[in-house]
Image (cartoon, rainbow, N blue to C red; front, side, top):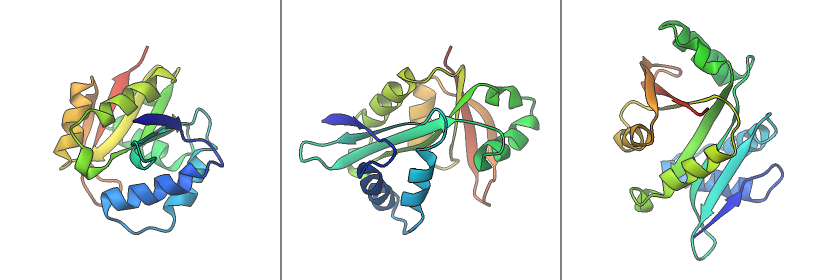
Length: 167
């Protein structure tokens, strides 16, 4: 398997968006444009893992979390409630980590996550995951992520906010 950078303007972004939709069984025509827009944000880093045939089997990306960004502002409000908004002061926001459902549990997510974070110079990182996504929760906790807030409802669905100190 090969890991490749997911960069602005890359044709892999369209493939990554299609992979995302397939992995999560969603239809959303805005995903490719959202991935493309996010690739222009300061501190953006993105990776895809390809299998031997060149198919995407894993995807991870994020960027520096800044005031005025949609999710940063949601996270700030939620973390402020329990005195943890300082996590966002010098923060990398992990936006997506997706592994092919048939390959989960084989180390792809951990590998992508670790490789992505080696290129990050921020002091902290944050992410959200669905409260019922027990596989992702185990992955993050096994890799040193700390629960900052549970019962976070940005869109009416229950999420958890996790953080990791990087420096």
